[in-house]
Amino acid sequence: MLDSAISIFTAGRNMARIFEGLGVTLKISMISVLLSVLLGVPSGLLMSSKIRFCRLFFKLYLEFIRIMPILVLLFLFYYSLSSVFSINLPAMAVAILVFTLWGTAEMADLVRGAVTSLPKHQWESSRAIGLTEPQLNIYVIVPQAIRRLLPGVINLTTRMIKTTPFVFFINIPDLVKVAQQIVEVTGMKNLLASVWVYGLIFFIYFAICYPISLFSHYLEKVWQD
Amino acid sequence: MRKEFYIFWLAVALAAFWAFSPVSAKAAGEMDKIKQAGEIRIAVFTDKPPFGYKDENGDNKGYDVFLAHRLAKDLFGDPSKVRFVEVEAASRISTLEADKADIVLANFTYTAERAQQVDFAKPYMKVALGVASPKTAPITDVSQLAGAKLIVNKGTTADAYFTKNHPEIELVKYDQNVEAFNALIDRRGVALAHDNALLFAWVRANQDFVTGIDFLGDLDTINPAVKKGNTELLEWLNAEIDKLTAEQFFFSDYEETLLPIYGDSVDPKTVLITP
Image (spheres, rainbow over the protein chains, first blue to last red):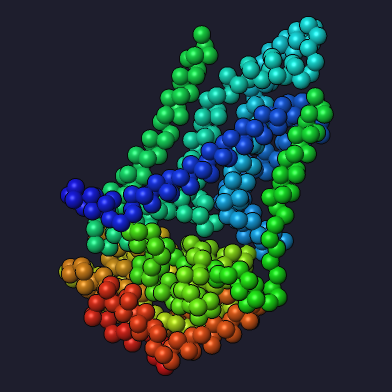
């Protein structure tokens, strides 16, 4: 029985292809998470700011992204933009753009939640000791908010990793698609192919997501002391 | 702090502008555009053996891919001047409409509905439906299927045919071929409907099953498709297919890609267009 698994994974470049697929998955999710954090933090601060226009703008943006399924956004930016406005973006750019739009919205909302959960006297006492607005944000609010953010960011990261298979609908072959390709070619003769290949994919996803959650536990502990 | 934010958003806007600015597509001079690009973009399947799939080395293979290489050879004198766009069944039409590929060669069956959205060239293959069932409980007539579960692949000709003509049959739908065939082995339906040639091949490898119905519905054709209104490319393709049919290219394509799967249980004439 084990022979059937070995024969699949040793044939040709199958193993290398699985890792190339993993590379695509990681590239999209990691770049998007990074950009989402970079864009999400200032957006979140603006969302919780006193300027009404900012709050309204981000509220609309957040609701729009939340209501739209990711698949629809991918189609919109990859196909519709090209067929309607002749803006022909490469698939990888679309994937990162859409995942970043989504991540930024979620990030901004997390930041807003974290910031508004801080007690009011943090602002008042900062101003009382003469901190300017940027100083107040950089030295007082953001450091405290980040600790409260962590569980949400970890959750968002793993969700992004798990949502990447959608990119095949815009013609990018990710990890799951490579698995499907291998199963479809070997599966007609090897009935266990799907079990072995999808089993391996399961462990790969686990191997990526579990350390991320371990790291967050570690940080939570370190920061508590 | 406002100033920082303005600079920040300006940078974001610039980045977005930069990302959105390049490549625009125009309908004029399609052939020139392809020649200028130095390669032809052809949309193929990557998980539908034996028509379009990736072998264990990750290379595109199959009946459609064999034709794609030939088109590149006739256009550029080099069969490798083709860039494969990897599509799903559901994204074939949008891939053309959005100018993500020049030609779709992804086992694309001609239907009147699809012909309103894309332009089909002349056929390079034909296909009819068949129904496979266990030897112990063979299905030899569609009437036996009433009230029973029939396994089909989502979005395929079999799916469309049974949904339209036999609403009394309950369809169990799968995305992938392997899933569908495994479902039949597990008896999650009494029979499986698919392209007859593929069924002949599968039954040969799975002796417990028979194709009780080997010809059903209309004889459909598989055609290359281009973006609606791209007549220049369409005319070139039509001339190309006439030429290839005349020189029996599709027989060598068959021998290279389909024969190893179908074996001699299938007469090539049932799937090929004969001049």
